[in-house]
Length: 148
Image 1 (cartoon, rainbow, N blue to C red):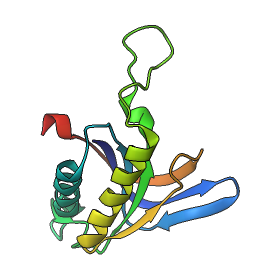
Image 2 (tube, helix red, strand yellow):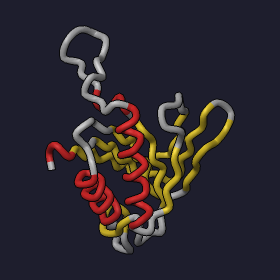
Image 3 (spheres, rainbow, N blue to C red):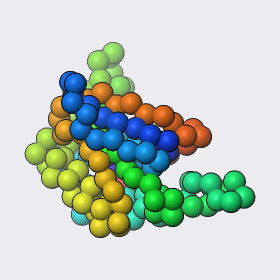
Image 4 (cartoon, rainbow, N blue to C red):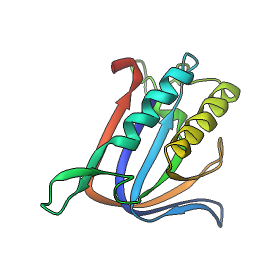
């Protein structure tokens, strides 16, 4: 699994004119899944993200987790995180998980985050979405379970 995490002051996702998910302080997660991903990757990343200390404490040090600040997560499926651009100018997505598998793992990941007492908003898997966010920091962190 690959995840691009961005710390935000607020964010929302919409499909067409309909807002599907909206959060205040928290994380936007762009979530990419490959066919080899499963429970081990889901559990590892949910635990890692729920305990990640990137919010400022009273001394303005990155020392608080999303749970500590009562933040929320906006989770967006993003197969393009597995783009291969080595050859030519058109990316290949052959390394991205097939949609049925990816959707199952994506839903399990969101549930795992909720099991860590996090509020999780989502977009629509496989849809063309518009994501708006107000980056805070900015803080952007990339997770890749192939490199844990």
